Length: 135
Image (cartoon, rainbow, N blue to C red; front, side, top):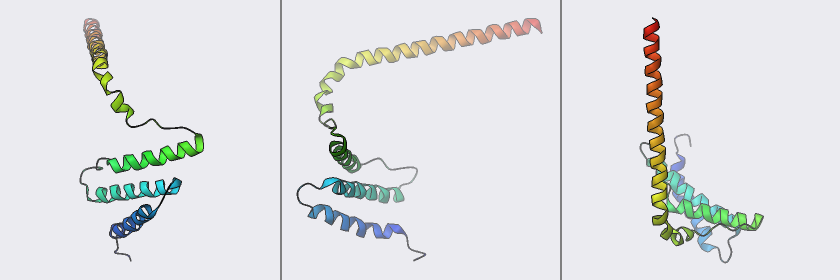
């Protein structure tokens, strides 16, 4: 038991949990969504144990499982409906109209930053010139 690693039990655990989800009929309820989220996180944890140099990217399975869990929890507890993931598709036609405005704002920020650096440099230079004259 001392030399065992939990990773060797993950496939059996994932298999039994997947069987619970596959065998569920009708509305799964909050527990079913939690099991689905657990499965996605177990799969992510398995990928992390083999990853080198940081966390692996978040998979769509985790996003879908978390969204399903939160959607069900918010709907049953707070009567709140999450926006559809299709909303991004439906609003994508607006992106070309918004892009020039955002790019203009970013350019204004860069211009303001350049002016601030120039003003700071001028202030430091004048302070150095004043200091040199007095010493």
